[in-house]
Image 1 (tube, rainbow, N blue to C red):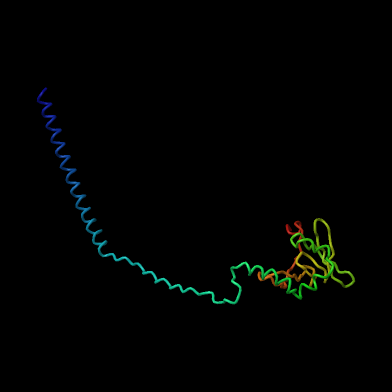
Image 2: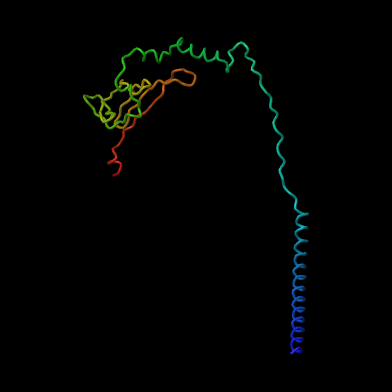
Amino acid sequence: MNAPTASCAAAWALRRALLLALFGGLLVACEAENQDLQAWMALQHREAKPRVQSLAAPKKFEPVPYANTGQVDPFSSQKLIVAIKQPAAQANSLLSSEANRRKQPLESLPLDAMSMVGSVNKGGVAFALIKVDKQLYQVRLGDYLGPNFGRVTRVSETEIGLRELVQDAAGEWTERAVILQLQERAQEKAR
């Protein structure tokens, strides 16, 4: 029984040696392929030139001094005091005519709360129908709407033209044109 075991062990040793030789040969072949690949990568790396655009030189900042020594500094509290006193002294001609008249009921409501729902012609005079909180009002040329002294300048079947007086950023009163358009009912829009 010893002989077959010894021959079996010798066969296993021979098989193991053959397998090691085979795997060694494969590793050498793979290493040769890797060497070619590594050589090609090194060549590409040496030949590649990066294309980086150079940055533009920064522009030189030249500060401008505030040379208006005789005027009020724009960041001082005096500027605020001067701005408060000027509008009282300078009553704008646009506003002076509006300030002395009696207010109409629709001037106390914002234009967002109003919607034009129709128009009527009575005796040759065009009236627009305005709805505010489930109440209807008739408006004609010359009437006033909204808090910005909005005077009706045009009444048509589809819109009302207004001229409002508003203050700009400098505190001056200027005119602004506003249009209040006809609002269709939800049922008519669905059709």
